[in-house]
Amino acid sequence: MLTLIEMTPTPVSTGIDTGGLADFLRAFFAPLFLVVVSVVALFFLFTREITRFVQFLILAVAIGVIFYVPNIIEVTAKAIAGALGIT
Image 1: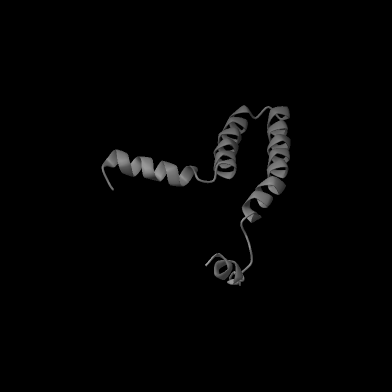
Image 2 (image 1 turned 90 degrees about the vertical axis):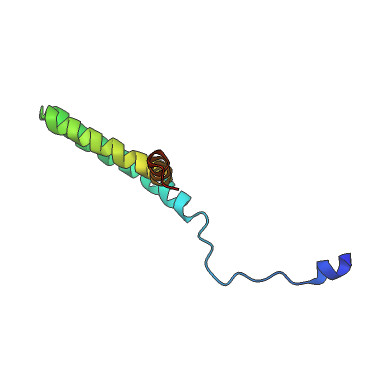
């Protein structure tokens, strides 16, 4: 019985393996995102536009959280639905 199981061929994958694609893109664009945020933040600080700096900082943090923690939207939606009593 064991030799019969060992002799059965494993199915060949027909599609492209994209398991690590999201991790690769996140690792590639994360430093680029941080550099752009830093440069724009320094620009707002040097031009003394504090209101725009704060607005940009809040927006950058929100985008960064969604970017670095991609399942936060799903978890938040489930938590809101659970709090509202929706199953």
